[in-house]
Length: 132
Image 1 (cartoon, helix red, strand yellow):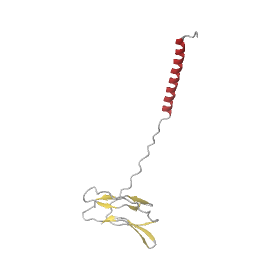
Image 2 (cartoon, rainbow, N blue to C red):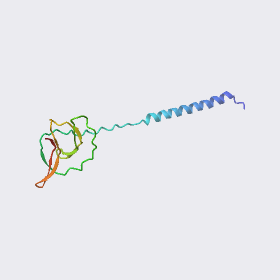
Image 3 (cartoon, rainbow, N blue to C red):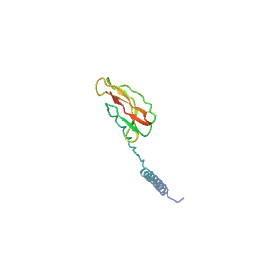
Image 4 (cartoon, rainbow, N blue to C red):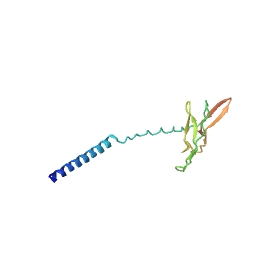
């Protein structure tokens, strides 16, 4: 028991400090190397804007349109707006869904005539919607 008391404390204190320092260094290393990677998903492209047609047009199509989506009709944004229900529009060589929306007619007294899909002469025909 000739060991001096202060040296026992300094060895134990030194070991505790080294252990604490090593733990802190390990925690910092883990924190820095395991950083959170945030991947930002790009926003979906906006749906095509429905064009305002004032006359019907017919297009021979190669396939029937898909089933229409169920839509919720919200409150009109103001007086003079009319609900144009969503519909499948033939866009070049494929069907594209135009969401339902409120629109103002191009001139007073206009009436929206929705698109139609008909068979004529053995062909599928898309008749686009228009304001009459």
